[in-house]
Length: 284
Image (cartoon, rainbow, N blue to C red; front, side):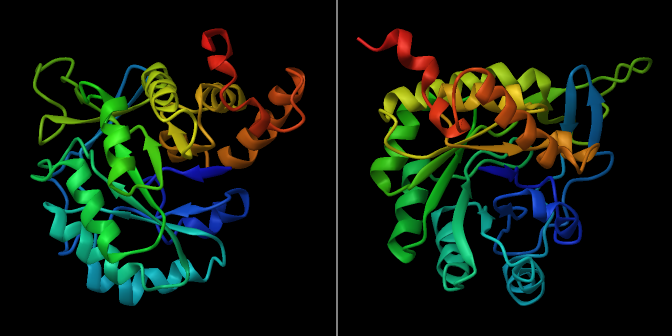
């Protein structure tokens, strides 16, 4: 299963790549409109991209009335990314968006690195959302958590249906000559190839902690079918593409083809059969 990472495609771009995705993940929605952070808010760095978009979005009311109908025209599974400042914010969105039959999954963005963090704990937010919605809830976690596996088990116990691993890392890029930050907010979210080993470690640890009983979407630096297969071997049941989409909207179709070839080359009829293969040497 191949998805796009939230924030990397919008409703206008979606039709161009929808045919090559198994589900479309919308940009994060917050209760009220957010203009986003000041410019500049994108900067290239070694092996990746630094962003400080700041969850720019039209807010729940406009999304519900104008954006969601456009996404529904895709006639494909829809995942809606949910954000907020507290558990009540998240629950408000989940309750309203969850009413729509077209919405398959609510992804709780618990880890955006370029906005102020939510005051509530991850498990508290998940529990509040579970109380108002029966939709599948995926908790998107930060790779910078001291013990991501512990948090993962906590959100599952609170009602999460699955995990999205991982969000970007906090990073800083300085101008070559002025030595000043290249982003207006200074620090932003770092994504790209350098994030891949971090994502693999997070998926591996959370698969171990949950004993492979919950679905995991692996993401972080995926640029090829081999990268996708690595995440599946670490424990992912689906893979999301992020920064690679900024330069290659054909990436989902290419990665899917490469993934199938890489799996067959290793004796798997289907990529899904490779899930958890990295754990076999550790099976006692």
